[in-house]
Image 1: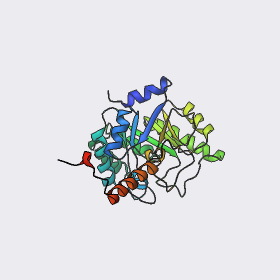
Image 2 (image 1 turned 120 degrees about the vertical axis):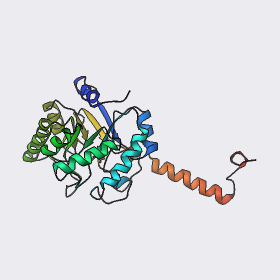
Image 3 (image 1 turned 180 degrees about the vertical axis):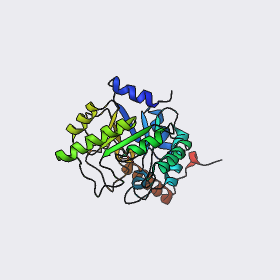
Image 4 (image 1 turned 45 degrees about the vertical axis):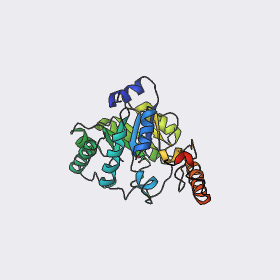
Length: 258
Ligand code: KIV
């Protein structure tokens, strides 16, 4: 059965941890679907790990719509969240229009970065559930660093999370903040928190798929645990193929039509 926002919210009440991962293409989205991951995020991290951009700022609505459609084709069980990319929610009207487009492409909900209650309201008024995102905000941050180490900054992040809950977000991503702050915010909210570099006290965790599979080696944040080294594995396979072609041992009888 397909997971809904209600299912994800009830996981917080039942103290069940929420597992969220990014996906951008059909084969990996199918794997996440078959693994019964709770939430798939078509994140704008797409720009860095798939499209080869320096950061997420160059990702367009056209990119997000294209990849959301692909992932939606593979997904039958996970809640599907799509990111509103940089400059796609500069006014409430623009945010509502772009959120509608992402849902027409197959997303169940959308996520955006920062404390912007008017954006949450505009999207929620369309009947679209909204996920917030506070702490490190990759679309606007000068550099990737831990946020909220200073008390004043920690208070601001906690206030941002509270404001997003009050505005109607159904869940919030907490990115790159100290573990203690992640836990404090989690305990202060009714809605689930999904941490990425925010410690074990969050209601759930999210990581970028290419980081956990070892497919992206340009930049690896300290919190990104690598569960496999697919880059090495793929490199081994393609060099083995090349060698067999050069040696004439591929194709053999088993891989030729008779
Ligand atoms: O785009 C993305 O992958 C994200 C995660 C870092 C939460 O927003």
